[in-house]
Amino acid sequence: MLGWELPPHNSGGLGVACYQMSKALAVKGASIDFVVPYEAEHPGIDFMNVMAATDIGPRQQYVGAYDHGEWQDAEDTDEYGLSPMRRLQKKYGDFVEEWARNNHPDAIHAHDWLTMEAGVRAKKVCDAPLVVHVHATEFDRSGERFGNPLVHEIEQHGLMMADRIIAVSHITKDIIVQNYHIPPEKIEVVYNAIDVDGLPPHEYDRRTYEYIEDLKEQGYTIIGTLTRLTVQKGLSYFVRAAAQALAKHDKLAFVLLGDGEQRDELIALAASLGISDKFIFGGFVRGKQWRDAYHLLDVFVMSSVSEPFGLTALEAAHHDTALLISKQSGVGEIMENIIRFDYWDVDKLADAMVEIATNPELKESLKKGAKEEYTKLSWRDAADQCLRVYCEEKERCR
View 1: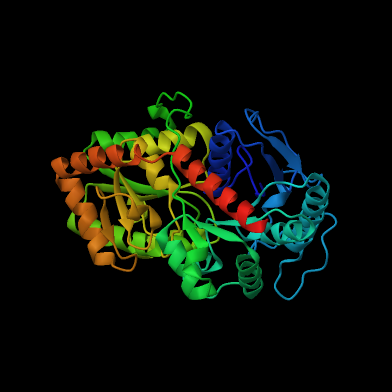
View 2 (view 1 turned 60 degrees about the vertical axis):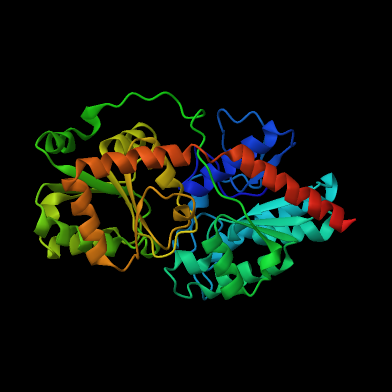
């Protein structure tokens, strides 16, 4: 299993999905060696062997495709500005190739573009099939733009070389077919899930967000999201919709938790629209603050321009929150008790927020329905689909 991150050293949903999928596969009897690009402890992961491809620390490995950070032995930046990441990917690929040559795995499962090259190299030195698991494409990350051409090229090559591709939604499958010209029969859709039983006990502490709790006591409806602040997430549309909603109903307060390259732009947008007093930017949260944030919200908004799945929507539903989900988000394929809107339709999103805030029966109906739906999803079922794919491709490779 090849992945770029695992909890607690994850920056988003990718690490969570890798962890949960691996855990479910292990329960089914799979023996897993999971390769990450950094060296660190992973408390509580005793169901698989986690291997470090390099000796760098986990914080350094977050040099992203658009984040031109440097670490001590980084090469000079190339024309795409990716050299720190490219150097790390090369070291990662060297390790994975050597490991595959010596250990002869039954299958190679590579998660997203960061590990695709390593997966291809491993495939060439052993007889194992390569399964590429697509959690997002450059098309998604760039907000339906072309994005970084080098990343797109890596994805194109990895998808072509894969024996089988797993997509987290039909939206993602369609993007792979249309933008990467991959035959649809090569792609299996396997939805993410949420491990309710695996969530640690949590007691909400209103002191974490006491100011916002005071607003709730004054009759305010709290609307928000937890996400990376990037163009992919369609947050400028969310901010504009918030301004329109406040013009119709003033008992609304908005919370945006997360960090990213759009932070300053979004803060400036809220100020220019005159809603800074009702729009709270809380920064990046994890652990207790993350769990408390879900409890705090009455309504969770996913305004993504292109969202392959959207695991945070399931997490929000688990914490008793009504869901507003863009039609461009994969999680909407498996949930009916939500209100959907096109990410660009600011009017509809604003109207939906006001409708939920002023109609308690609708809000409770959405909460209850979403909770009933997400509990039907299971990582066990997802693991069964993956095991079937492994077996089919292993047989085909003989």
